[in-house]
Length: 250
Length: 186
Image (tube, rainbow over all chains, first blue to last red; front, side):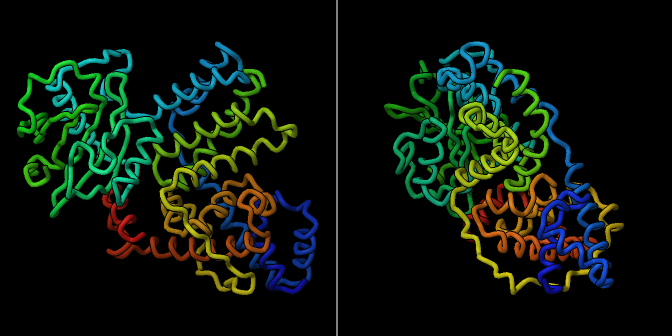
């Protein structure tokens, strides 16, 4: 083993003697007793690696994460046991819900609302998300990518080529959230330097659309919003800023 | 696997799995999702693993595969030859690292190409040997070593520059803008 090979091996040696039982590593470590330059290099390398490892180990973990993992597991275990696939449908649902942002507490499981209520909720939710630094889950370059992502989350989109009849806008990102127990797809779109976010929900949860003027710009939580529907879905577009001119995007 | 065994498994590994997920995704919410999904996969299929001593490697491998599966575009990892390993690493002492916080180190790690970042995160989390990393990533052992070596060099470069920040590397890039930029670059 030459010095180059030893250095390569030793750079993969974890601090604290974790790999000292490895035969190749032991051969490289043996060289340290005769090659002082290599030994100095290795000591500095190990000190630095230990310091970096210590820093990474200090990264805080969200306090609720363990409880969320175990809660999801307990639900399915209590019902059917780990090996029953039905149990995992329940567990998956719990985990999915935990992982999604809720606009309202999950306990409020009313599955119907008016279009006006939906529009107001979207405005309020977007204002809340913006205050915390709105973060879409996935950057995209086409509606096909949006469709693939939201479909994988079993979230609605409508016509995947042009959701809600939107044409000529460029999708840039997307995300799935939950509203009153229903999946809502958010499609972030842009055109000519303007940006807005389209919230798509299944039309069946909207029992009345008569309380808004369809495709008329209104304001919710200070943001410009506009609502419309088609046969299968209801849509609310909210401007990325309080001054976004939505007419340029419709 | 009974409830208490599962709880022990979670207790033992969820923190380092989360940190590994954070190094992959860079986002807390996504890292939480990946960690949860990994334990879901364990309960779905992991109980079939006969050798329980391999549970840790199974979990990290599964998390990595979940991450790959969720990626919009898979990064093509460059194969780095052993002969091209850099010997001269930027000077950086352990005492300097000790003055940094964990977030700074994690941010530096995320500046690396994923080909280097993944083995390096596994290495620094001290959970896996280079041989285990090779199995997990399905790459030759020599490639793992060269990626570790090069990755370390690049990480040190970044940390050295962040020790003396210039305007170019202290600008914060909003997450949304970053995702758009990443897309435009792709």
